[in-house]
Amino acid sequence: MKHIVEHGTTLIHTPSSTRSNGTADGYTAAVQLDLNQDPDRVLFAYWVPNVSGGLVVSKIAQKTNWDLVSNVRYAKTAEAYGFEYGLTQIRFAASYGAANQHESVSFSQALLHSTERLKLIAAILPGPWNPTVAAKQIASIDNYTNGRIAVNIVSGWNKSEFTSIGQWWLEHAERYRRSNEFIRALKGIWTAGEEGFTFGGDFYQFRDYNLAPKPLQKPHPEIFQGGNSDDARNNGAEVSDWYFMNGNNLEGFREQITDVKERARKAGREGQVRFAVNGFVIIRDTEEEAIRVLKEIQGKADTEAVEAFREAVQQAGASTGNKKGMWADSKLEDLVQYNDGFKTKSNPVVEELRGGSGVDCSSAL
Image (cartoon, rainbow, N blue to C red; front, side, top):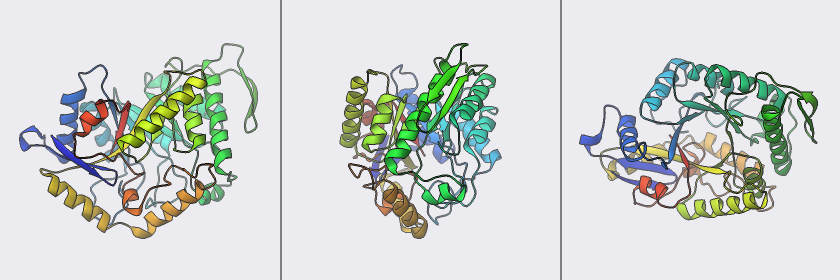
């Protein structure tokens, strides 16, 4: 199996003899053979297309659909090939090429009822959600799906989305401070005894809340959270189970992982944080063909939508102390595919992930 990555997109070509029917099958089958029998394997997730427009912001012809019937098929395929997670995204308003959006928690629930082993990571946005309500929602879903729900607490990047639904727009540090409170509140509610849980923060206050039933997962459903700034890294170190990383090369990922691990050690959470990286996959029979497809996707980019996203997210992260918001270094060609991705050299991606990168999970597209 050979592959190369450019601009955050993983380009994989597999010999025809190793490929199953369908482009995605060739990739997932190869990954399954390499990783799924290894107890220390890298876990794999996939982006759930629960918004319209496909998962590349390009005018190239796309086969990805955002309807439930198609998504059930994608989820069952991912489950069959050993993917551990599906990741739903949250949008309350049109942006970044997505004119229509299904809500993340309810969509995750629908896919969970159509699968048996796959776990769904539902994106939750503090502000529109209160932690007491989110805790109840997720605990209920956890109970009737046998412990297969997780959450991704996203701090938000789209100011117009917040204001359009009547939510206050906070500056970067305050958004992440609110997310920190949100996660601590979730954990407290999910793990409290019969006496209930009381929380007195700057953003959330409640007394003696006793959630019943509690989630099946112990100590609680997994909590994902990401970013690149100091605020995001602190949240990853202090309160999250998983720290999501965006587009970077191996050296950049190692720096982030080392830094967050050290922050976690200082916070008394050494060894309690796992790491997930974003990746985008193009599968063709040769590297040359895969690169040609990438160039076509980028050449037909919806420039207006991508530039609007890039401007919004870089403005949202500009108030950080180190000027390192999630997409601070991303260029237009990086953001044609969602969120920027894993930038490797021409070495095998699987071997790079396994060979001391520190990555525990890759979210593939």
